[in-house]
Image 1 (cartoon, one colour):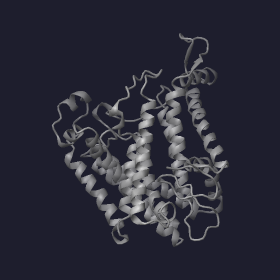
Image 2 (image 1 turned 180 degrees about the horizontal axis):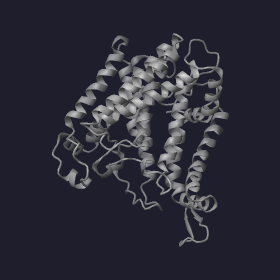
Image 3 (image 1 turned 30 degrees about the vertical axis):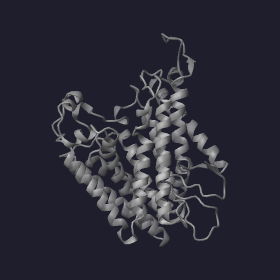
Length: 413
């Protein structure tokens, strides 16, 4: 639903929006909105980076010849998970959770998780037909309802994160910490040795697996909940720890110091991920412990840097930060609206609508995305045209975010 000014436009996993002047009510954490918006922009870039003119490391590492790895696109989803966790303390303590009992908060989180899951299914249905880029699509069936993807996993993480925050205050931090540790230890225990997969074919390696993680994957929907969902929730729990520290320090006027702490903690987490990767390679496909630690660690560093620049640096730095992050901050306030709009429009317009191609192409037309890129490459050259196409795509949704923001409309779940 859309909120007008004066209502609380708390975005799922976001900071808390309030009417100016309300005493004792939490305000949005601008750095968190900016971080979320920057990640959305990064998502647009990496999702459209499949072009010879753009370096391969902008995409997903995937199997990578059995070497796995952590490329730029592999950071987008776990950073969203981390952001969800950071925002929960603000939302529960001063936004949608203000004046609400524990059971109502827990049930509200479950409802929001279900809505996010449903939106994820809707997006999957929109992508069911073959598109013009060669993707075959999947016929809609009852199995479509049992589909874990970006939004369903974010919804699951949000539910678990809220429930962890609802633990008694003296147990809250330790509960989130031990949950994250337990999941990482469990994931390490069920995973096979992946250090010797370099040079192997993925299909051959998968066919020969007899380990516990592979057996869990065989459970279908429930198996994916365990093998992918629990590591996703662990990432949310690590974000929850950062968010709780920011919430407490904000109330005490010590945000700058907490930003420094987040930077240090992020360096330690990232270093731990690098050390673990010696025995368990980083892999988004398998959500390995080293991947979770490195992605949450880098997210903590970036958020800490934003907090330090905005809260602890001089006026010149603050003004520069405000100019640089103005559009990402606006986009971060309507994250769900932009994500759903982008996914649905990609399925029904960008890969469907036909547009005439420039002269010299063998076919006379192509789907909207490819045709736009072709025209820009003709006018600007191969590399500049590829980047310009991504910029045009991202700007379209930035304009949408600014339009909603100017009308004080924020989409929440």
